[in-house]
Amino acid sequence: MHALAKATTAVAAAGAGTLAWSSLVERHLYTLRRFRLPVLAPGSRPLRVLHLSDLHLVPRQQRRIDWVRGLAALEPDFVINTGDNCSDLDAVPAVLHAMEPLLDFPGAFVLGSNDYYAPAPKNPLKYVGIGAPHKKGADLEVASLPVEELVEGFTAGGWIDLDNVRRTVDINGEPVEFVGVNDPHIELDDYAAVAGPAASDVALTMGVLHAPYVRVLDAMSADAARLMLAGHTHGGQVCVPYYGALTTNCDLDNARAKGVSRWWPGAATGVAAPPDAAWLEVSAGIGHNKYNPVRLACRPEATLLTLVPGA
Image 1 (cartoon, rainbow, N blue to C red):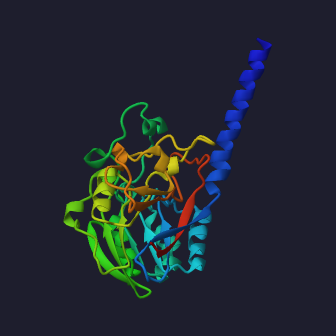
Image 2 (image 1 turned 180 degrees about the vertical axis):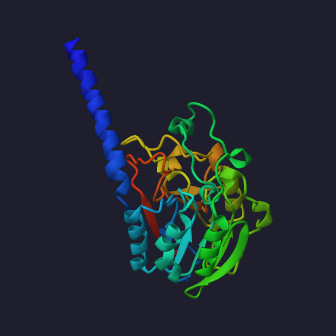
Image 3 (image 1 turned 30 degrees about the vertical axis):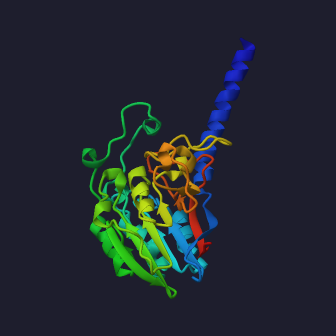
């Protein structure tokens, strides 16, 4: 019994230490990921794209605000924001302040559910399939956020709203085609409205979405988007060290919860990869739902992508 008591105490101490680390330390350890991707047409000049996602900001989070503002020192050629900027009803002014230096650079954005709806307390076990299913879409019963104010702030700064929009943009002399959808997690995506083969006279066709649902990834890659950017997953947020994510909070497989992988139509069902499979980059995001303020084995992040010509 004495040995059992000691073991129980040790387990409890380890659990308390892990909780303290994830809630007090790791969630503030912001990091910049860097990837070099061969996705541009031959002869194109390299482009540097800064990808931000899932800020989930509460106005008092000055450390997060300062870190995001400091990313302007990277001087990217283009900025992509893939949504879920807010974690509070009063967050929009703070979000715009955080993004202010980055609005000096060309950019584009799509929205996530936490740009429309304020977060609510949830049992985190729902995300891994334990307990009642996670609500989405019309079933959300949370307060609305001032999304129009957020969109107006971004577009006034020069960023392009890509929610169910197709647009070609000149970036440092290179034409890049963007195909974006509104948040698939709350079923606002309308890919049919922007579907079509990738343009033949651009350096790259890029898909942009908040939640990386298979139906949208398949459709974008079938239309020959060479690169797709998404967020939403938080990289699993609470991961098992040396194992990885337990959930993506969507139908994307856990192995792709963050980072760079390849995607092609039918990837989720085991169809063999073609040699020209698209590249998929999923950001683990900068923040978290304010009611679940933890990060474990999954540091908050932004991503700097250096895009270069492919074969």
